Amino acid sequence: MKNLWLILTKYNAFFFFVVFFVFAYYLVVQNNTFQRASAVNSSNELVGAAYAKINGWKSYLHLSEDNALLAEENARLKEQLQRLMAPDSLEQGTVVDSSEKVQYHYIVAKVTNNSIHQKNNYITLDKGRIHGIKKGMGVISASGIVGIVLNVSDHFSTVQSLLHSETRVSAALEDSKAFGSLTWGDSYDAQVGTLKDIPNHVKVRKGEAVFTSGFSLFPPGIPIGRVIQTGVSGGDSFLDIKIELSTQFHNLQHVYVVDDILAAERTELESQNENNG
Image (cartoon, rainbow, N blue to C red; front, side, top):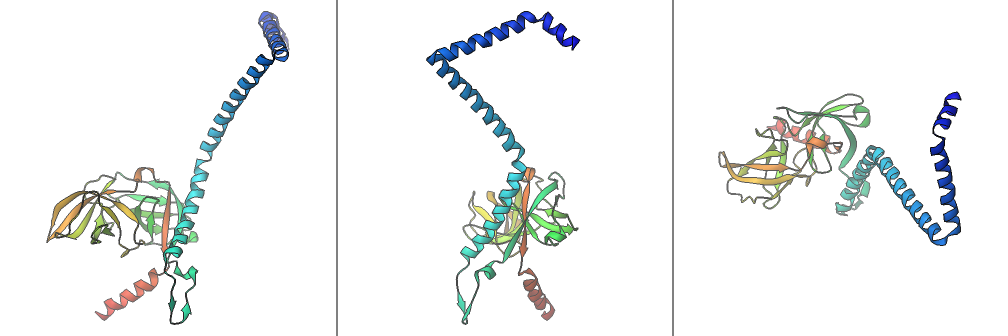
């Protein structure tokens, strides 16, 4: 209390000035219409600017939550799109329910660890066995292919990234529909891959889009990237085509693990072919 009194005594002139200034300002505003309107407009502008700043900070703090909600919504939309694109049919007098037309379910997961500068790169997700994730499932992002689930625990899973020397994805060219095997290649550039096994006679256009063929773990039509270099001979009458990958691996946050509900049935049937051979 003593220190407060000393401060008031020492700076009393300043405090008196502030008090009289505020009182004078109040009298001017109260007794003059123009000044009162100007004061109200100025205060509204200041308050509005302050609220805008506060809302901006709040939005920034909730970005992670908003992104997670958007990822969940995208997963639902992907499944709804499958239902809309599946043809309505009546086979042998049996009505096929629309819910049975969905072959792929999407499990949203958050990236907790990611490498892009190694020879063989891996990604860790915050979802695991209890969430329905299994080894061998494909992983995609909103913009393209990410990789393949390698190991799974109860609450986490690791993904063999597309940026891995042993990752192979069946991919098709947009124009010719010719398909081959997409690999990361030997460029060690996180945005460049190589499409192999395309026959020499196929005309490949620079800038041509490349999608998943549907012959592997991934649904058909998932974007992979665009052709940036053509005409590179891979030997044995095939081309090696350089692809600019559409997935931005350096800032992956949310991904979708693809659960193909028909995968087990297809694998069992194909294993019968091998046994017969």
